[in-house]
Image 1 (cartoon, helix red, strand yellow):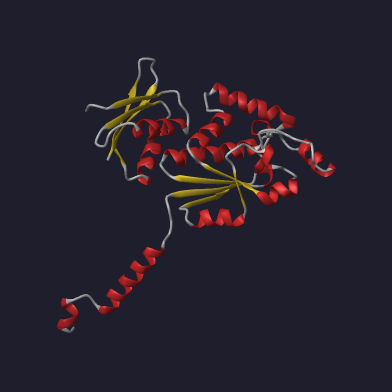
Image 2 (spheres, rainbow over the protein chains, first blue to last red):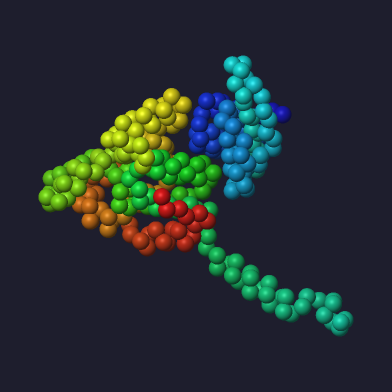
Length: 81
Length: 184
């Protein structure tokens, strides 16, 4: 999957990941994908809620991983419709 | 059962659908959140700003009405000139700005507030002042309740620029078209 943009939201706490994501997604074209890397475990439910109220974005996939610093990361792929 | 009834839509059902469609047309709800911020507690103000900025990030329109103790969040300076004695006393006894508000629990004369702020800083949580300026950048509508301003002797010069002045109808007008309304 190729992303138009990648947002590094690691270390950011609520509500910053969605605020940054909103700014980034506004700058991409329809059908393009934004990848958000976060460390906040709340971001998983947050992005699910985010797409619920807004039909212009679609949550394609959410993954969990570990970054080079050993932090647990939550990766979200959002597509602009 | 009559053949006629089976082939088409029952007139009663049709009438019900038509009525519901008319009702739906009259629904003026927007994708809006409206909040009343009554509290002058730092923690409650923080909660309201997290919800407001979060909603704006989700593409929702946001209106926040500041009334009574909540009004302190909109103050940019304290001006005693032109105030009556009672108003001066009130101005001196209330916080001069958002970040000097007390916390609702364990304030201990301001120690609790300092502790909370430093803990927020340790955990890299966005500070309340940053959230407030972010909320302004995101185009959130801030409304100051004129009745409370009047009672407490707060003038428009003491409030930040770009704040709308309004009353109960301003709030209800927005709340009536909102999907979410909160009183904090």
